[in-house]
Image (tube, rainbow, N blue to C red; front, side, top):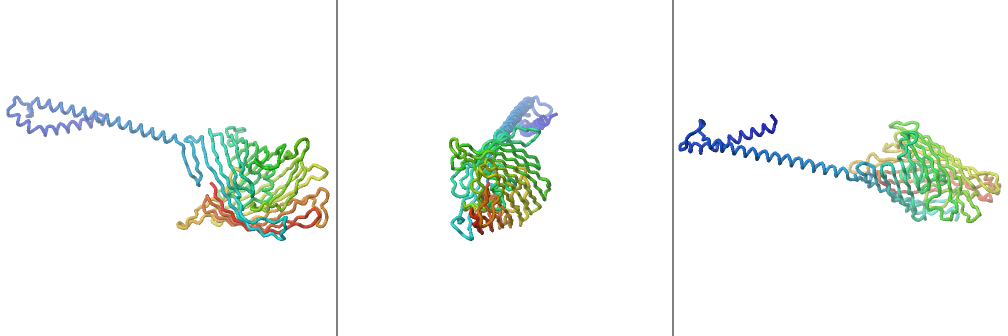
Length: 502
């Protein structure tokens, strides 16, 4: 017998007992005047009436049970419908302050991104001349606002505007690209084809996000090389792939969007190749080795008509962008190409980090000189995180991630963010067959100058949204002019950056 049937029988028995108890006095009174009676003292008519009332109660009970069952089914259906509707809605998150919207199936994603970097610097130049006077003051180094997203799972895109810069620039397009990841040649699980304008990492320092770098700027040689066939807003078409412990890219590149201001009648074309490998990895350490190569296949032609004017110019600031003055500069070199080869090495162990890169730049000169000039540079940098955080290698760009504080700044809970001290030495040599002081430059010689910079830095990460950097630089520039006179100088700079990014 089923549970509902048992319950109904129990209810009927209880109801009959109640009715019998209620009907007993009346039945006794009637029994005196009414005959015949049954053996229980209740007349047959009374028994039939009681039975009819019990049947009616049972029918009402069954109707109530059916109504309750219908209500339960309706509520369950409504609840499931609500759950289905909720599950189909996009998911909104605010991780690290970044608004992100993701479809229920994960096939679509949309995020708003921004970076703000405000720099201040005080330069002390000795000896000071009109040619090397550096402008102390402030500069909005980067002010970027953009969107990134995914469509139909395999397509992704990015669109960023740049409203800051190296001083004096107007707002420009920073990146605008379309990326497809649904093609898997040779069994590669993570393979991308991209077209548009963006910044492909040209080396190890460039592979670290500009919001996570140790100092306000990259080492001079790394910054100089990335500007040849890579850099922000560089148009191109390329392929990228990565595995758990490796990264590789190959990109054909063109001009930088919005640069230069001078007319071009044939835009630059070049190639950019890079490979990186995490040779040793553990929870406490990572070791990186990499190699990169750039080739400016055809410099931009700035002459109209049948005339041809192609040139390469190598110049760089003293690892800061508050002032736009370059202290080392080769001048324009008539050339039909340039190659740059770079070697990368980096390692992290617990809260220690070190990295270094070396570059060789060769210019294919045109004109009367029989010599193709060569230039070089390198840097060595290291950091110690006082609060114990660890820089981890990432296959996203084949480089090291930045510091994320274990305890965000909140004196009430004893959290003071992450603190880091850093040091770097860099050398950039833009001399080639420069000759001796006091004499004119040899035929074909280039006196671009040699720049050596020692930098000490203190970085504070109150949380993953804000970062504050304080740097001090000792820069020594050794350079001869065309007549052989020394035009070098010593530059001491104190600089500060406040940054927010999500």
